[in-house]
Length: 250
Image 1 (tube, rainbow, N blue to C red):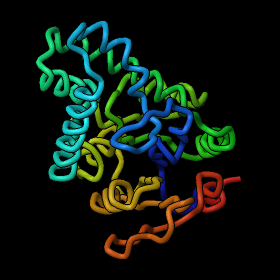
Image 2 (cartoon, rainbow, N blue to C red):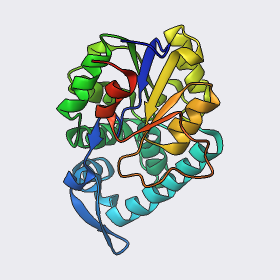
Image 3 (tube, rainbow, N blue to C red):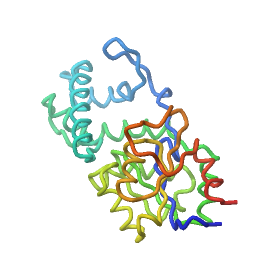
Image 4 (cartoon, one colour):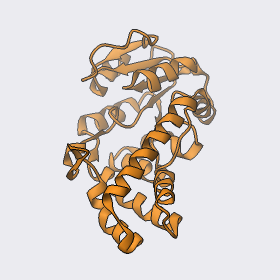
């Protein structure tokens, strides 16, 4: 049953369709804090690539500075900076040779670890199967490595049901930039009010979709209250399992 006028449902990826579990990553101490990180997994590649000049503490210092730099760029202009570029900038700061090749090796190790601790609960995949009987399906994700984004989607077992998949690393912009939402609508060949977007973040998902005129569902699980300084979503549910009920899908 489709009585709300929507022709397509578009999902966010992380914490909407899939859950990632960083607590399953190796633990290490950084600046006096124990954190879960892929950095210990990168050490063999860094030692091989940087040779006797490799120092993990120096790498972490440069890497942290680059992360902060990229976060400022993302906040200021809602552009995407890829994982490869993150490692390239870090290696450049360290004066490494053969930067691009080593950056890609590090990207693949890092992303393999991220993929390894990310999965879709079966009940979420079942929701996609139910919705796909009534709606065209799309996916729009802020993610800085397109290859791994597509692999994680394939791991859900329902990737073939998504007609349009847009990952920020492929288009150089990220939510809430209206450009990425317009790209999505162009790919779907639908008007904004014919699409329902579903996501878990207030700024990127809710404000981004509303800024493009797209109705939006906010997933509230473990989020606390919705920020008062962001325009409220059209609908609020706990998680993806409640979406069929909201839409009247059997």
